[in-house]
Image (cartoon, rainbow, N blue to C red):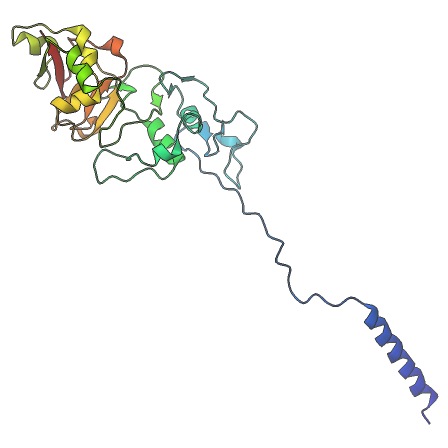
Length: 280
């Protein structure tokens, strides 16, 4: 017969076993339905000393950037166009130009990704809309009169640039333009000549009212090679083609048309372009 001590220990073991049977089964695996949110990281401009713009379309002080995400605080206006001229699509601040350009209602990302970063055929395309806006706002052929003279304080521009194929929309069909140029001799000038000089050499006069008819990519491409593309610009010598020997920063081989017809003139010239002139 078992001793009282052994009987007591058996009772303790039975009680412990019964208690454990009442406990829930242990977790056999780690739950997979719980995940950690990926951290949000922003890209931002680094050109300015005091302001910066992130790829979400916010502008802020460089000192207020979140040190972990590198994003601007989302307290200000998104896609702000502060200090921008909406007609010209140009701004007086690089950061606000980028912010304004990022607005999907102003810039279509699908169109942006088809554009080349530079003029040569071998140049790559923009990776996304932020890449495009940073590049376009930094420099623009439409914001300067050739080399280094700004047209106005609004010299950070994000307008859509024509690609290297030179394609562009025009309100002038070939037949319409032909009829509007009836009686006009379209002459290609020599490097550095004004249209007054070009027409005068043929004992004719430049017709200022017809300059706007030549101020179109389809007309420029008809009379010139435009091998580097056709682009909007602002210069008294336009419409014109940049000569091959011009400095690289002037886009040699590119055709330039004036954005504002009211600024077209017969007496403008530039040492690195050849003008297309309407003479009669």
